[in-house]
Length: 161
Image (cartoon, rainbow, N blue to C red):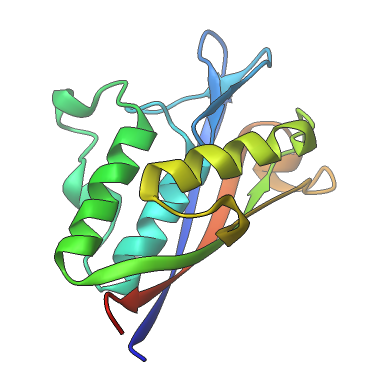
């Protein structure tokens, strides 16, 4: 069986007057992630993992922050586009494992909704979408609540393999 694995990482600063969107889900919080698009670090890390598995670069290559067409873009729409790119090259996502690093808010109540939304975007059963959340024990930018980061690993298999 032809398999490929990729990993991805993203981090964005927290700021006022922005929604907090993680895994395509808007989460009630006084701070949101700053960025050119919706700054959904979880979805961005997953997209980078998918692209990395096929040595296709990163999301900045396809959706550059210098291009106004991506300003405020919904990362779930971008994820669907990356998934189509992967499929056009003869591959499909088998499973995703990811972790969000954030001191606050508590993310456990939102994990299943994130798994559902991400899975639906790429045609994957939510049981194949792992999303975990952890704090950074008050260390680093996540611990100081300056930002939120996410890590992802994606396994791809050749379609029909």
